[in-house]
Length: 344
Image 1 (cartoon, one colour):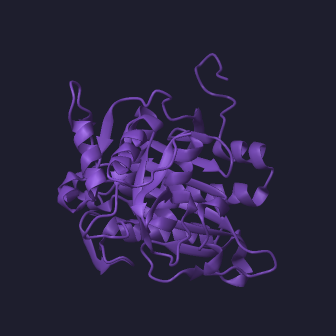
Image 2 (spheres, one colour):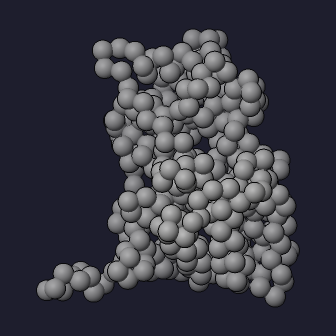
């Protein structure tokens, strides 16, 4: 609703949406705390060049990656916002080797896992980055432990990501719900509802495949064969690979196509973290009508959401797309003698 001057006098904000959908004040507080951290990270990313925030911080994170200055800042911003929200009990960050237990006087019912700045290797060249998160609830009658996070995606209460680019967009879903998109309006400092009931393109969308082909020689034969199918024919697929998972998944969700980061001979368990990359992105893709598969992993081809993390920083392979393109991957596995899931 806008007035004669063009101003929205009834802005559909994030807090309003959460309260309308859930009537859960604690969840509204949590989403507001996350939104606050995204705004802080946005400010830091936008000022990175002027404030000299490019470059390494001189440390490595929980999985051995070099930490950038913005990695450390983003992590601190999220931790501070979530601890002081009063609704969290356990936090897991890619940047911290151990889980963070919230002091009892500030603790609440939620357990949150997050990658504070995904794609940070692209920071210094000003390419899109993002934040990924998943939310669980602690077990009733307990103070909350890391075991409350080491559960399959079926237990995930909320999953989402925020992408920092030409616009700042927050995309998330509640368990069993629709996928919704909110854009940060800098004039009012609020995330405003702009994408409703987001769905993967029904016809598969644009023919785009997204993967790091530098790993081609290390992939199993079905993945190699599927990629060759994408690259052949009268109208080959376009190749698009940013290297920031948030950016690649956001494009895949909006435009269609397929995103692949399979296991390989170097990384037999995959490269992406299950708890705060694989599961939340899989939940978004599936609830938007897509398919989120592990490819061949643990002796079978399964759903990412069926994986149960055995450690907070464990990894998993990921192949995500619509039925049209996932069918090509499954056909390649079937041709090599493996049993592939049905697309139904």
